[in-house]
Image (cartoon, rainbow, N blue to C red; front, top):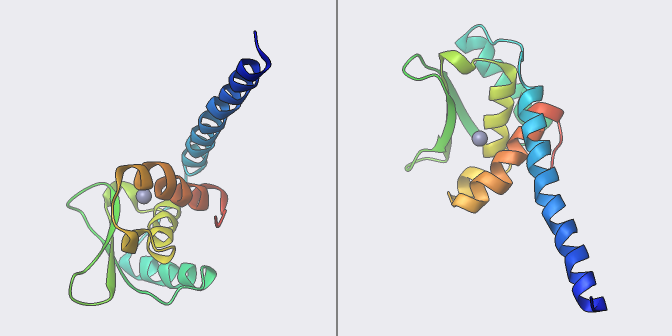
Length: 137
Ligand SMILES: [Zn+2]
């Protein structure tokens, strides 16, 4: 086997390890959020979002809502005003979900818009790393 081919195979092995390690870390971050302390009320949710914004040096206008119509947590920007909505459903009213959504907004993920690669391989892991490990990447 030639030196170049050997070097290529060596590099390919490394480059296969990196994405696997990255996704493994992402999974570990999600697992780290299991059992996250529950948020009991709309008032507590609003207070925690304000505290999280300070932690992230973020002055965006975030309106969090506790909802019962779905179980997930999600966020988006309203079209008319510079206002960001976070909806947290019945199954996700906890600190980790709140941190995850606030991070999406404060780090500019919502403004960047949706792309499959950006969302699943950059923004979603970043929000998971923050919620699970407290990393600001
Ligand atoms: Zn997310």
